[in-house]
Length: 259
Image 1 (cartoon, rainbow, N blue to C red):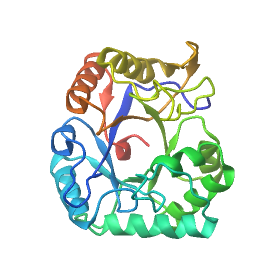
Image 2: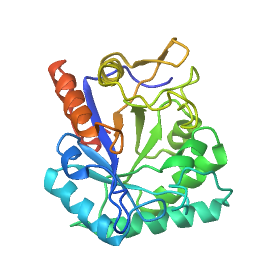
Image 3: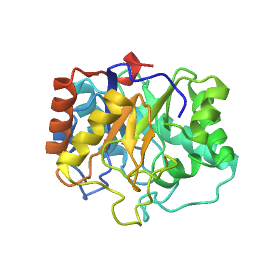
Image 4: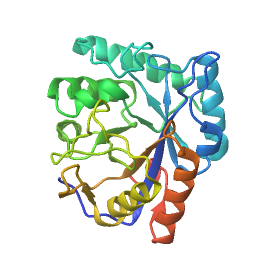
């Protein structure tokens, strides 16, 4: 996958704010202490105005870089079902969600945008979808960082557009030999074993490589590592991954200080 070799500096991010109404998902208040950037749900797949305000507040208090986590309008499916939206619909829905989240921040500005679920996965290999996403973010704020899956078609679209981008990899998600995320519908797509998550994170941050589901090692150079906040044991995982990365000499910084 294209890109420079690991620099010894990486962002550690988590998807958060995915509670809704009376239903609480994830241990955001605890996990946020160990990450440097957060991507917050904006109401389309999870989250609502009260939870958005709450999660922005705890992220600001922790000093984490805040980004929007827009999705398809799919509350019932948690944004994980594919939807055939037009390019115009994608652009408008992303701007709507990004603007809504930004309104809750102290300076009305965000650090980055990282789409969620099916919207993210489709952009990995669908050039038209990736283009619509990149255009939406750039039109809203040209200074925002575009978080894209490392080595994807989406990354190339973002590079061709000349936008500020961050390549992402996952501590707790399995990848195919082609560098794509294994669908959650398949067994082993989400990695729960703490030792394995830590080893993968260290290899990604220090070597720019990852072991795919078939056992082969592939290049996977990234600027940020994601850990899901709703993964079982997420707090302990976040604390352990950060400690082990720093013990290995890796500096953990928000995306705004890296790209």
